[in-house]
Length: 452
Image 1: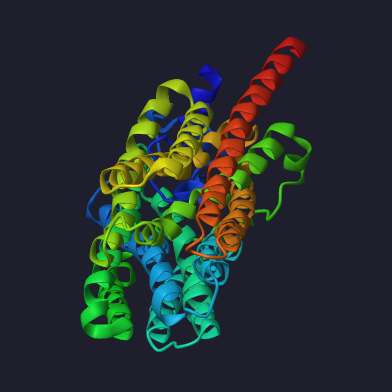
Image 2: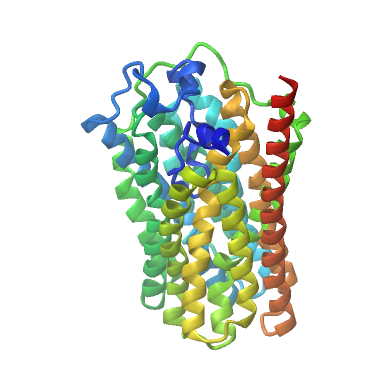
């Protein structure tokens, strides 16, 4: 346990991104591997990292805006899912519509495979400009769409690719400006994700009845266009590109059973994690729990709950270990998902949304620090996180479409039970898998100690 907590402190448990803000902690590009493996609080020197100041906090502000423009949009897709099913794309199935949002989220994560090395090579500005352009252009094109394939290309692919170019570099650049306060900086940056997930659904649901789908979406695009000035004006790398190149793949990781167990558990957990985000609004309308005006706020409540879920579990993880807390929050989300079977009134739906959002925040923010304990060579930390990043992206890609395929008919009670069961069972398997990973890791540590 002490070794795990020592490893957890490398990144800090208060990492706040919706999904792996620290997945490209490129401290090895700023500091030596030895320095990267030393907790910042214990290191007497940070090789000139400012760890504060106006310029450094402007980077945090810019990264905060990027989180709004990336994960904030992904977390808002629930209102679009409901609108597409009930209005614009009524001829498409729930599964087909879910592919739009899941593709957007998957490309956000998988895009790190390309944006990471490009960031390392010194192309941060080009990534930021092209990413913001694709996100905003994709939203404007979405506002003009009338068919399924148009929406898939504009909102799913164009916006998703833009998010993938933006997300990872904006988190990585903070490692060049912060060492001792890195966790705080990442925590502040990460709040842009739930903030976007709170505000955008409200904007869309309030404007769409009066201005129509097109202008409601364009308003969000114009907001992001205005906010894009912040990262473009203030964000810039502090150090020149490193001479070495980061490996794309760590083959040794595939030989380690704890890493494979962790990746498998993560796949199951994230396959079911976003089902409530996509379907809670439609569920509330199907069972007459809320009216159309109030139903959009359920996605807002999910995101509001996740704000606290990013702080409290990470704080406790400093004492109990990140892998233990990851297993606990995943199992907690599974229990809440099973509880969704019995939710049939407004009070229960609100409590479910807040609590599930809380556990969701823990599940999405703990993996970066948890995987540190499974990485014996800190110089390969970024590579291993990138591998996990892409693998879980595939889970996000297929998870909600599978749930949508189960929900063939929104008026079928049995189909809704199947959808809820899919979310609950995959989360349960993921939670048990994380607990098993911790057991395998501890057994490996004991075996190593005995051999030494």
